[in-house]
Length: 284
Image (tube, rainbow, N blue to C red; front, side):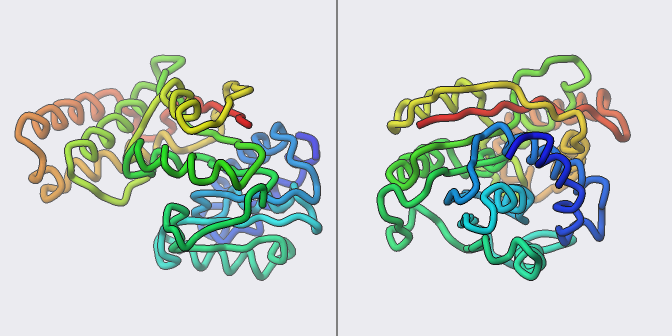
């Protein structure tokens, strides 16, 4: 399916998401972003796809559209179905399952692929996908082990994440919000935010080579429509105001974080902060 076909279907795909009832414009921009990604990934109709970190199914819906009625998407997430707001993962999955894409999707929440009980035959999938979920891993070691674990299961890996290298000054607020959250996590104060282990594109390439994947393509991804800059800035400022989280940090780290939060407040706009760019990697 080409880019124009998938992008044309984005409004109907977005409307089929449970979150569209709460924020239709945001849902549409998120779906368009993922449609552009999948259109460039050469996922043919009839393909089998393993999606890691599926969350509320933003990418899952686009993948299910791409594989068609003869294809299958196994959408896995370690989180409990009750996680998420204002729509939980379980509610979003149930909404998708009740729609026309439902028969193509197998949602598996509370599932850790590093658990020995979770297994698939060698070559069970044509593709494995990780889209905007890798910073949620608890550590690079956990991500490395996951990439190694799924290596025998799929012929091809498709990966996308935010790019830590800003292209312009108006992306610095998003970058700073990401780095502050990463520092808090790295210092041992753990939470449930979207950013736990931020790492660079170069860091991802190093991980792939360590576990037997061969990267064979990479490119920038446009994020101009996305609101994630605003979301992460808001999440960071909320986190900085949570005394119990900061109180567990070593004093030197706490003071460093507070100083960086002061800078973030000074440079962030009330809204419409420009998001960082993203990048896409392919590997075999």
